[in-house]
Length: 189
Image 1 (cartoon, helix red, strand yellow):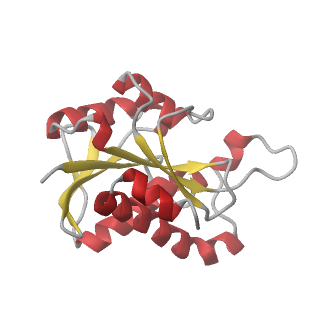
Image 2 (tube, rainbow, N blue to C red):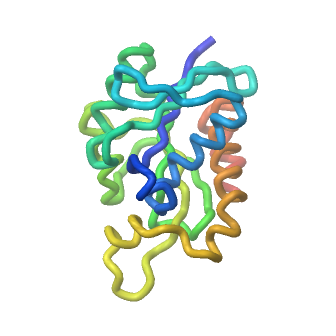
């Protein structure tokens, strides 16, 4: 049975826990709950959890560095577990999607996302699957870099558990059906 590496992007520490930029961590925490396990420090520089999600072998990984430096940890985890790039799935926040919108994508541009840029550099390719977790655009003329480091609004926090569930369901769909079939379902909603 093939094993997949599912990476959640975020920034470490309690000061960042509720930030929009930590959407990937939130989805991985939900997946860990579904697996009934806890993350543990790993020599790759990520917190990892190995298990089976709906009968599919998976390694969940949350890099312990700041997002802009996460690529080395992702590459190290992939090498340690012998997981090829085509079985890496990265969950990240996405400014270009409305809050709570979940979309699947393979490869392509990085959209100015420094976490994705770091991963692409470390893997020497943009060709990896992504779960894009919509956080919306910043209001007015707010700098996007400031916006992503702010906590979700009180209104967003009410809807956040549903969006996190949808993100975890999207990961499960990729594992169960493959990316293309999962895209047909997830991206249509």
